[in-house]
Length: 59
Image (cartoon, rainbow, N blue to C red; front, side):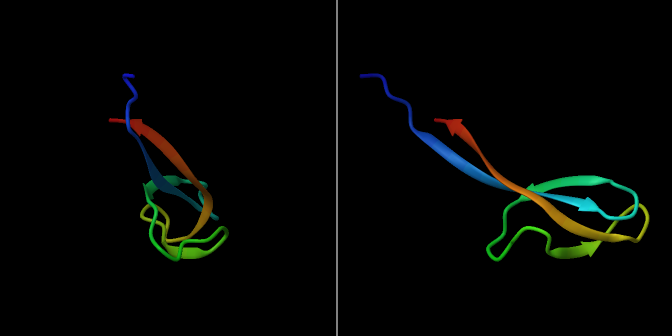
């Protein structure tokens, strides 16, 4: 009767191979696990996708 709409938002976790820094960002089309994505902001190492997941938001 009072059902709420659920929206699932996809996120990607990137992790630096060198300094272990993690960064969460919105999922982009074409993301896949263990892909090297960019340079790390803190140590200039290589960021790699560690996790892709979704969080539900009730509307």
